[in-house]
Amino acid sequence: MPRFAANLSMMFTEVPFLDRFEAAAQAGFTAVEFLFPYEHPAEQVGERLHRNGLTQALFNLPPGNWAAGEKGFAARPDRFGDLQQSLYTALPYAKATGVKRLHLMAGIASRNDRTAVEAFYKSVAWAAEFFGPHGIDVVLEPINPRNVPGYFLNDFGFARDLIAELKIPNLKLQFDIYHCQIIHGDVTMRLREMMPIIGHVQIASIPSRNEPDGEELNYPFLFDELDRLGYSGFVGCEYNPRGRTSDGLGWFRPYAGAKP
Image (cartoon, rainbow, N blue to C red; front, side, top):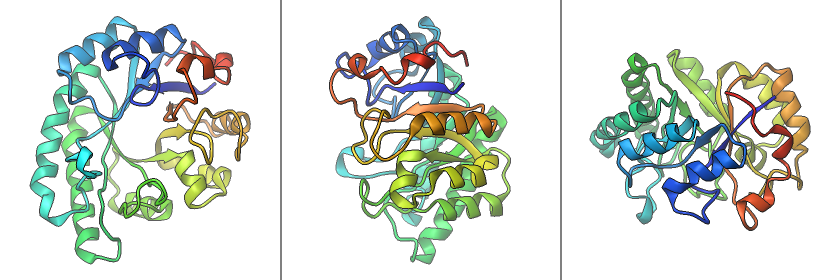
C-alpha cells in the first residue's frame, strides 16, 4: 500500500503552517512534505513534526528569491556560491526533521546553453556529495514548462541520463506523475523503466492539479502499479485542494494510517 505524505505547502492551508502538522495527522497521514520550511526556525518545524508522530518525507533546498520568480540556481553558473550556501542553510532543517531526501531545484536556464548544463552537473554532484555523509538522498524533479516556463530540468530522459552518468549512490529521481503526464505522457511505462532510480513520487490530477480522484489518469491503477513495482518510498500529495482540504480526502481514506 502506498505511503502518502501530505504536502503542507498546498494542503491544509486553512490553518497556519505550523498547525498543518496536526491537521495532517488528524486526517490520517503518517508523513508530510512541503516546499520550503525556512520562514520558521528548524527547531519549531521539527517539534511540530515529532509531536504529531509524523515522518518528514521531503522538502526543497532553498530556491533563491521565490517571490521574484527564482526557482533554484543549480543550472546558473553565476550562482554556484549561492548553491553552496543553500546546502548549509538546509542542513539544520534536515537534522531537526530527520528527512532522508531533499529536492535540488535547477532554476531558470536553457539546456541549449552549454555553461548551464555544466553548472547543473557540477551543482548536482556537489549537493549529492555534501549530503551523502548525512544519509540524505538528493532528488531531481523534471517540471513541466506550462507551470514553470523556462525551467532548466523539463525532461525525464535528461534527468535519467544525468543520474546514470554521475553514478552517485544518493542521487535519485523525483517522479512527479503530474509533471510526467504533461511533459511526456505514457506514465506507467516510464515508471516501470525508471523505478530503479526513483527516490520519491508525487501526484495530482491532470490537468487541474487538484485531488487525484479523476480526470486524465486512473490513480487507483497507478497506486497498485507502484506496489507491483515494489516501490517502498513516499507518495507526496502535491496538489491544490478544490476547497477545504478535509472535504477532498475521499480518495485518501482507503489508505489512511498506512505506516512508514
